[in-house]
Length: 359
Image (cartoon, rainbow, N blue to C red; front, side):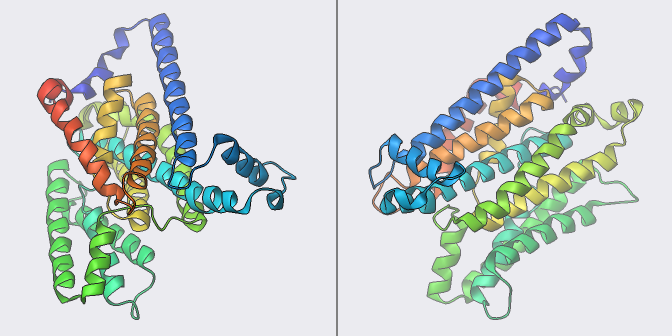
């Protein structure tokens, strides 16, 4: 397949000096993206129905984060708005955006297909069924988040087990197995929606739209450390993803076991995706769009593309969440905003750069 993934293979002819220059420029791009993310987070903390100044936000953050800070000395209303309401959802949006974007990049590299996204193996359908089951039968199941997480993993590992034949997992078979498992869980979700009472049905539909309206510090403490650890592991292994994306034969020639490392990459990306979906619901497009945008900006080398995609995913979701809670008096689910903004971008990508972007 002629695509951007093959560009990695041609890097052997570039001189060391040129490599240093290009890698230095990519480093500057990553620094610029991270700076934009920090500015977006700061703006999101200031903007809201309750008007605040930037100095008010700094006072609250300083009181909580600087050793010896006195929380009782700051305005209680400012503390509640900034620290208890806005910061948890901003940090959760940052973590989930990075998780979905980097998972999308990993899946696209493993499957050598730029149309793949983190939900391709049924993670979203399994999570949706698990959440709906916990809503409809709250007395017989564990919490909604845990139920969604468990069934998301069940869906993905079910698809992986279904596709495994004679010790190997062909990519096409795995994608088809994901479609089958996703369709099965979607059908079971429809049954639950049909049987649910009106109040439960509204809760299921609201959860499926995705959002950060219920974000609390407990969610941040659960999601953020996991995302940081798995992201660090993936980045340290990203050079192997470069080799895997060149093809199984090339990987074996270079001493890499493609089946083993594909399994590791898929497992880690699935854990991040399942955890994210279980906490905030289904948010589409991020895992498909952000790796494309990062690849166009910084190139196909996963050592740079994955961190760029993670930063851009965080920036995108923080921006979408800021719009979701400020466009109207009643908050719009962020999944709707992400889809509305994401569809035109992919249409542009398809029409203007379809051949080069999608291979």
